[in-house]
Length: 263
Length: 282
Image (cartoon, rainbow over all chains, first blue to last red; front, side, top):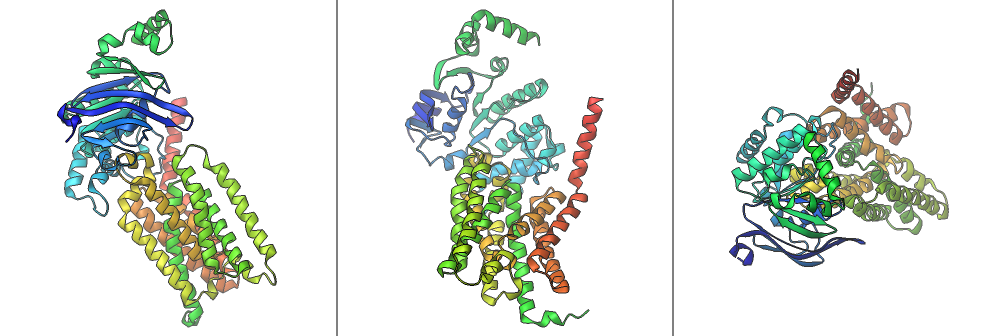
């Protein structure tokens, strides 16, 4: 199709600039991600991490630059068909416990984009949904109202919804924020397992530094709408680099990471 | 009891209007409840009232004025609600008071007797004509048809709009479609129920259904059933005691809501959660 597929890049971002009203969210970001790669993205709040994900699934509006995903060159407003191949898990959201929708129905929403208008889910779609729920360990809660589940369980269902979508790219925007430590590690392990099993290309935004070395092939450090550094987790997650990223003296980083490791 | 009243054309028209209006309003109410936009609905129904009065004053069809005004409000409020970037309640509040102000301004400027204007305020289902019923029927079929045709898109949109968008569902289009249907339903039914009361026939049956089920399909069906039940029961009491039908319909729907709350299984969940909290704390 185009250069993206020739070089086997699933995601090819060239000098992307994105702005929301007065704020510039991305100030010229370039990133190439190979098919099958697991990339972790870290950085302080407001660094542009979420915006980076939204330009990959065609929901963000580019002011400048070029984004090519799975061989599609994205222009503003044409991300519609691409989104069906890109699974997106956002931060855990509060869901009204009275919401009239079951776990199984939420997971089925992942199929809706692929099904298109006027087509109802068939037996095949329900089988895919049930397999996905099984993979995330939520089969026993499938008939429960979604609002009755815990935050960690709801995130598992969101991941099942992405699986039901049968995506090629998996975008996760702090999926473990606000979850407890066990739920965090469970979700991370699940994401890694799915990434490997489905041979996905994964972008994972997180604040959980301890999670990165276990999961990621590559880490991208972002700050002020720019990519500051990228490389292997071992090379990048040093106290010096983190100190620069978060504007903190190295000794302080060392102290806090030591404390976090003990916790 | 004497049922000969049912053979009169005006009563048949009223029953048919109550049936169609009850269904359309209740189905719209499901959206209003699930999208957490009751205030937007109130605002749109008062806009319809102001628009209709403008029509009466300047001598064009009040229905056209009502439809144009409620869609105008939807066009202002829709983008705010969709982006969710500022709390839309404040702007909706301003708009709401403006609409009420305009309504009374147009009423004040109107020469001659105000009986027609007051009729729009209280509603007059007993004077509904065949053409009123045709408008109501078209809107009811449209609303029910759209829900059947786009059920899965609607389900995803009312659950989480951003998520719906991220799987490739045109959620913004769906939201505007819903606002458009709300405007159409309010316009078609407010001369029967009354500009001030129409919103409770939208909200109450759906709010009652919301208390009773965890299935969206059942919520639509229950809401429609409650809508028709409210309208018919209200009509019956209105005839029995010779009181305004709009008021009896609204009061009936409120009573149904109260009963639904009392028997709601969802309240048990809350109690059960509270119990857990208390256990944890102690």
